[in-house]
Each structure stands twice: as structure tokens, then as C-alpha cells.
Image 1 (cartoon, one colour):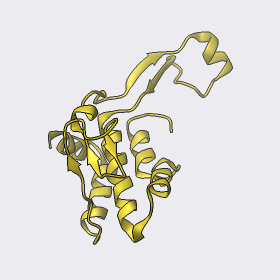
Image 2 (cartoon, helix red, strand yellow):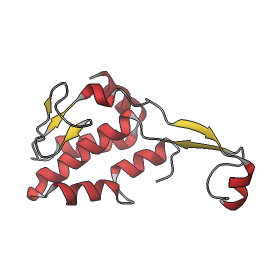
Image 3 (cartoon, rainbow, N blue to C red):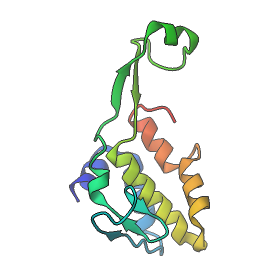
Image 4 (cartoon, rainbow, N blue to C red):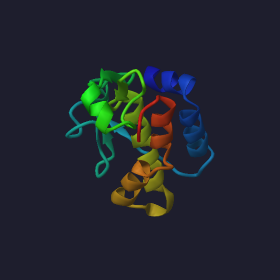
Length: 135
């Protein structure tokens, strides 16, 4: 998978998560198939539609924030008035790997694993910081 190789080459967070998975006894099952999930993956059926993932950008999208919004939300963006935002292919793939890893550890359910991926110290949020995104 070219995407996985690309993300491992640019992200320390990816490398750390994959080392943790590979050094554990957790088995992560992912069944690939076109139109196998409503959008990208189904945690219930462990399916993954790679075509859906490819519909997302590789890098964050940069948008210009109008001065009016910057005045009222000074933490919103950089001094240049630009904000990196969005979900990338790499972020969603990392989310799925992290989520499935937590689901495989001690039989945790989807909801607990999903919320852990969204928590402040999660691999997903560390990765977002690497890309310059707010969490």
C-alpha cells in the first residue's frame, strides 16, 4: 500500500503506532472490498473500502480566514490569516488502524475505541499536530 509507505516516511506518529501494533499480540482484521461499507469502513463488519479513502486529500487543505473572523477568534489561524483544515487520507487510515488496535485489545467495543482515537492524546490527534492541524 503506497499510502501506508508514504505516511510512514513522513510521520513519526505512524511509525510509533505501527511498531506498537507489530510488537503486540493484537490481530487486526480488515476485509477490503469495493462498496463494503457506507463510507470508508465498518467497525461492525471489519470492512474497509479503500476507494472511499482515496476520495480525501493527501495533505490538509489551506483556507484563508477573513479579517473579521480573525479579530473575533484570534486562536483560529496563523498571523497570515490561513488555516490548515480537513481530514486527510492518512488521518483516516491512522484512525482506522488505531481504532481496530484498541478494539482488539481486551475486547474493547467500537464506541470506547472510537472515542479513544478522538481523545487529546490519541495517535490521531498527535498526527494532526504533525500536519499543522488543530485538534
